Image (cartoon, rainbow, N blue to C red; front, side, top):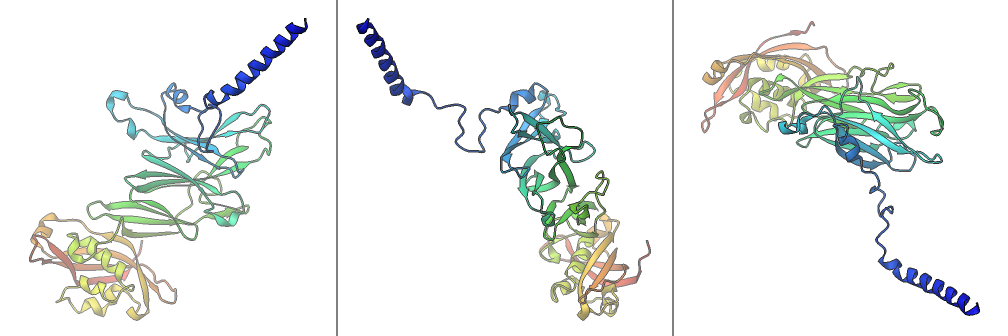
Length: 378
């Protein structure tokens, strides 16, 4: 018996030793994570594809300010048939998956709804967490951007809210989730700017000359919290400012643009900011009315800070343009004084002449006359 017991004990020791020796040969634990942004256990792809949805991207972010990483997942829906080869244009929706601290833990989904059950974008989606609305002293915002050819064309802003304070109790509608603080779209770009502003540009009917309507949004405060949505949370606040601007960078010189409406915009955009550039847009034989009327403004030029262009009216006439014949362009402009005063909108009718360029077949458009100037009445 004694020998048997010793033998049994010896075998146990040998088994234990064998296990310890083989530990180094055991494959790496598939449940272990080497980096917090890696999540080998959660493969959303098959789950979504079974519902005819395509996972576009997944980002690990602390979206609710709890010092833990959530899964911000973006997927395409309303997918065209695979044989159409157009699935890359399907709209993109998003949601955040969050793990609770309950026993047992669970993974809860929180949709990112940009309003009216709309979509977040159709191209590359980028999400980031930042303290954009800085005065709230709450958790930062979740910024979701849609990027097309390197240009941000849509931005939706969300903030986590929790009226339950306990994720382990049954939830009711609108008790937890990501509240929409603003959603913006611009085919010529959307960007977050200093001073908690959002700037949106959309081509404003002048596709050929890439002139855009620029809208500037500032947040409102409700109950101590800021938002770009109206108090009902269903619609965007009205823009604080609307001006006409270049969709992208302005031309480097008048010779760079064959469009008279673009020359007028470039002229007024430079007026007051630069003393030399505006002169390059004036014809050498310009009528005295051009300077006598301060270019249609009522403020002396030495008191002018800058000009805001509120509108451009021009009906393109290719025949006249090709012949370099004079054309009329109407601009609605606002003079902003150096002391901060702002004049009412004025309507200025300008005559432009096409000045031939020796080494080109086109011409540059120069201002030759102020036809009329008057207060603009809507």
